[in-house]
Structure formats: C-alpha cells, structure tokens
Length: 320
Image (cartoon, rainbow, N blue to C red; front, side, top):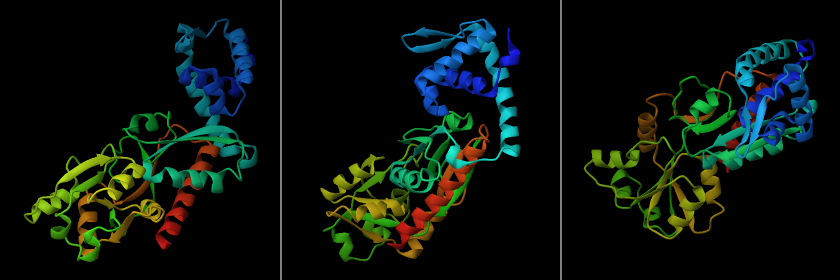
C-alpha cells in the first residue's frame, strides 16, 4: 500500500463513486470530467491493491475492501472539510461541484431563477440539479444525498436544519375568470358552495384545511381532486367551477400568465384563521431545508445565495 500518496481529492472521488455507483454522476457532483474520475480510481486501486468497484449492469458495485474503507474515508473527508471551512479562502469563481435541490412545484421556477441570476454569474463552474419534490426526502437531506429542499412549514424536522426565507401573509382563492365567486363576498359559507381542487403536496393534511373549516360552521365542501402540479391545477380550474386555496406568491404570479384563471385575496380574518391552524408545528412560511453533513465553504455560500435570492424573488412577486 502507498498510503503516503493518498489525498483529499481521491477520497472525495471514492465517496462520490460509492454514493452514485456511476463514474459520470460522481464526475458531475465533483465538477470533474468522467475521464478524470477514471484516472483517480486507477490511482486508488494502485494505492489499495484492490479493484474497489466491480462493474455490473446496475453500475459500479463496491468490493469488501471499499465497504471497509468508506467509514474511514468519510471521517477523513469531514476533517479535511473542517480545515477547508476554517482556513481556506473561498472563491466562487473557482469553485466547482454539483448541488441537488428538490422543491415543491410552486417553487421550482423561482429556484431556477435564483440559480441563473444570483449564483451562476458569480460561480459559473457550479452545476445544479433542480427537481420537483413529490415525496418525503427528509432522510436523504439529512444524510447529504440531497443538498436542499424548498417547502412550506409542514415538514418533518428530524435531523434537519431550516431557514425561513419568507413568511406567509396573504392567501388567495384561484378560480375560472368567470367564476361567480368573484362577484360576491368571500366567506366560508360562499366558498363551501364550490368544489375544492387541492394543490396537494406529499405531507399536506389528510383532509384539506378549508374543508374542515367549512364543516365547523355546518357547511359541506366537496373535494373535486388533488394535484401537486401548478400547470395541471390551472387547466382544471379553467375548465370547471372548482376553486383552489393558495398561499404562494409565485403561484399567484403564474396566474397572471393564464388568461382563463383569476384570483381573489381572502379577507384578513379568514386568512388569519387559516394561518393559525397551519402553525401548529412552526411558523407558517416558506423554508429551505438542509442537513449537517456538508459544511464546506461552497455549500454555505450556495445556501446563503438561495435564502437571499428566494427572499428577493418572493418580495418581487408579492409587489406585483
């Protein structure tokens, strides 16, 4: 074994290939070329006198020796990152790597805007994978497989850190532009007359909150359906008498682009009641979630840019 030749970069490659089981995915995460990852693996094989990974149809399978090395490699990389965090000079322009961000559909465009306008101009070598969040990924965020989630307040907070980038203030009812609701006072009684299309994320309440509130005053509200897609919701609203409750300024801004859908702001008293019901676990608002695994300078820089950028995007949308 030639352990004196082992370095930080090789350990990061070992962990990335172990994580993804694919050389090209490891390369994307680290901001390297696939050939550079292959050369690094060859050097690691020479150092440890082991193949480290066996190629199968499903990807690169770690050998027994690799399984033994991974916990030690993680410890060493964490120590290197502490040194990097405290003593290295971070330069966004020279920083590389890949970040995975999952967000509710209502936030995806805003996240992409922040990446394009606030992050990439300063750090052009960073790469981002931005996808719609449709299931509970808390464990993946906690263990570092996913870097960030952008969600509402109703998330499970175990082993997670979070920052609120915007509070929820105004709430809106969305409906067909010719909907009779736009010509009458908005109350629970008037809302209950129309079916509810629930913009439903994976961990929303089992029974929509608006339905429960209507029941409390002796009214029944029908639920016409559930969707986690904003585009789908707009098409369904445009072709029915259903209504949708939204607390998202980005969604309200999107409605301005849809000619057959409009919105009305909920009265303050009703909006406050809904906010109070939603704030059982934490303040009602919009959050960025992240784990404890990655404390690198680039990670913390991206996090601060996301928080600031989304706050600015929210304020801009709210001012329209």
